[in-house]
Image 1 (spheres, rainbow, N blue to C red):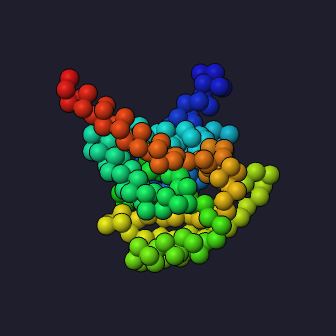
Image 2: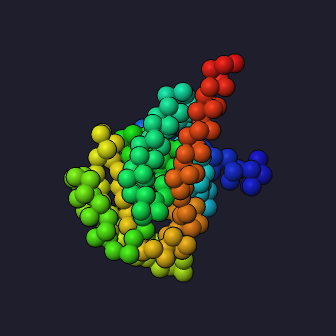
Image 3: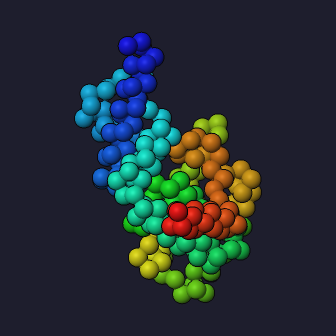
Length: 211
């Protein structure tokens, strides 16, 4: 086997194993999953390690393979929860990010939204007005040129589904943090885009039922 083909085969094997670990153990840390997979497979040369995107694609494949239609149904339910939360915080230009957007999440992992506000207190006032109990925290985000910044976050439960709000300055709507998976700007999905995703998935489901 040529060296390039061998490297591709090793990366595919490690991506599959890392994805299996993430699905089985509920991990969200790609690097940790890769390290565990490397220990299991003996693939210790990092030149043969897959990218975050390759592992994420393997997670999607495994969820579709092992959970079938239930994965699609859960993904739809998760995005409906996301849309409801986005509507509550519509004044802050909410963007859906994370595993709920990527399709690799589940109801236990919950929903993550970016909100854009002049002051974090404005989001707190909305939580108070809505009588939503929350837990306050911080989220460390990466930016271009090696920059990193911490932003306030607020976590609450919508029924049994955890929702995390990460509050960014308003100018970050055009200059968002880097996506931890792709290293590209994490622009997320707007309410209109989430609504479109839900409508398209519903249409696909009706088509499959009608076949």
